[in-house]
Image (tube, rainbow, N blue to C red; front, side, top):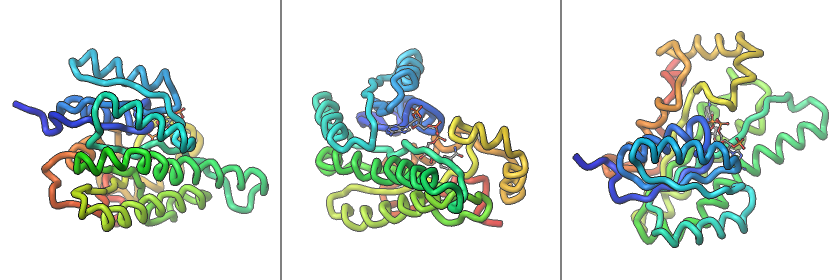
Length: 255
Ligand code: NAP
């Protein structure tokens, strides 16, 4: 039986680790050819290795999403193998410092987080836009529960701002690109066990407990928990879905 993404080429930023790697593996299982875009060449080749070992097709391009010119060059390089029809803007970082902390440190957090999580999403989307319009493609942006709230996650003004921005960008692009047949949606993960929060989880069990009190499914998520919604939003199963965010948060926003 053909996979849900047979015939598609999918580019996934931050595909060398965590949620991005989980999405790459699921897309390849569904028949897509996957292009892993990551700053981390080791992580990216690990993802490519896992996919090819399982019989799928994948390649990697080392890319820092904050480098606008490099994004354009990467899109040109990828196009030589065919236009992508799926783009996942997943690369992201997080740091949690109070806004009242040392001014230079807070400013650095702000600059780094906004430039990767928000400017990076713009840079990559703009670079691949012609390909996505040519293929009537799909864009999947990775938001967060912090696209809506910040109360359980204090000290994260920059990250909360960036993830609200991901949702705004998703809605604005859905409105603008619908006429071209390009669908643009987001996923809002809850607490997913990956490297991004490994230190916070280890150092701050109270914070994890407070998130779990808000999580009816009463467990942290795994990257595989985000892969299903990502396949849905990239496939024809979501043909009439655009401008939406699917929360994959164990029910966090319901309580
Ligand atoms: P992760 O395991 O740290 O993976 C992030 C990946 O992005 C890493 O491979 C990282 O490379 C890469 N990356 C970082 N900066 C980059 C840049 N400038 N250009 C290209 N790639 C870059 O974290 P994750 O949890 O899977 O996070 C993926 C996305 O999910 C992020 O947008 C995050 O905000 C979002 N999210 C995560 C959670 C959660 O609980 N885990 C919840 C909600 C939303 P390096 O190895 O070089 O750092």
